[in-house]
Image 1 (cartoon, rainbow, N blue to C red):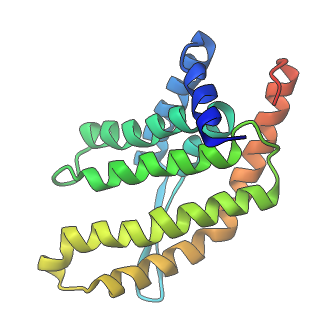
Image 2 (cartoon, one colour):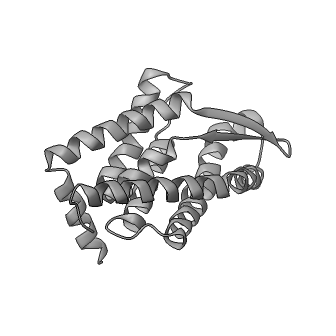
Image 3 (cartoon, rainbow, N blue to C red):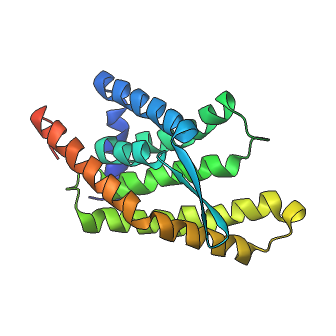
Length: 190
């Protein structure tokens, strides 16, 4: 499907009351998982943060497309900050959340959820958002106080994403299969 058509169909999802309710529930789940479903693991001297906040964004991308997933990614970051601020607000992470929604929305919306499709979406999101862009945001935020170079931040992001690779792909795939089965039983078609 052409990206413009994907965006048009995705925008139509925002006009349906049932879709809006589910999008709001996914947004709430994104906020809750972002605040409470977090674990930090020490791996090779790096602190690897494992969070479940990616899942509602990916589910929204599969169910409703890139625009609702973008909203969940961006608004989830803003609402989480408003509820539990952890320093000054930085819009870079909001942009990252929005881009994550776009990537999962374009890759998964109105498509069969397959391992290759999920892997491609995860790899693109990991390379663009979670590795290069996140390293840049961290470099901008902390380079003056910590003194780490961009390459040092980049290396720590690569290690972090390598640790999370298989679990996140399997979780997205499993959740996507459950969502597809539920949508088919409700009469919604791809």
